[in-house]
Amino acid sequence: MTGLWRQVLTALNSDQPHDGPGRERLLDLGAAELAHARRAGQDPVTAEDVKRFALREVSVFLDDAQARAALTQRRTTRG
Image 1 (tube, rainbow, N blue to C red):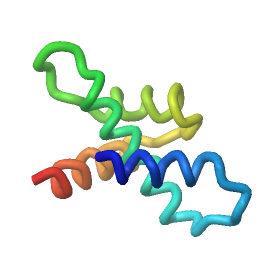
Image 2 (tube, rainbow, N blue to C red; image 1 turned 180 degrees about the vertical axis):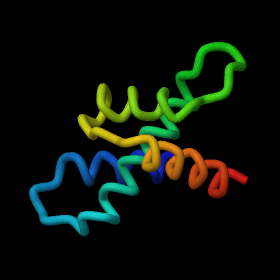
Image 3 (tube, helix red, strand yellow; image 1 turned 180 degrees about the horizontal axis):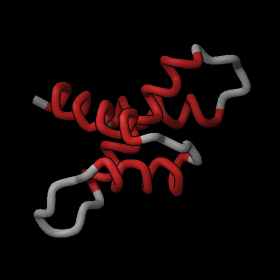
Image 4 (spheres, one colour; image 1 turned 90 degrees about the horizontal axis):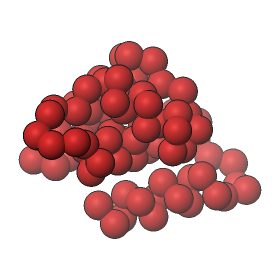
């Protein structure tokens, strides 16, 4: 997870141009990971949770499809 946060912070703080879709997917995945890390109790993380964290923490607006895709990618990469 540390590698992910380094990539997210680099994408957020860099003045260099980024690959739009690649950067967007990285930020989406970061929001999904953050939603999982900060979930309350044992409730499953929802797309709404991911959307809320994306907007609040990384200033990215996600639609339902993007949030669901980020949750799916997170599950796939985390095993």
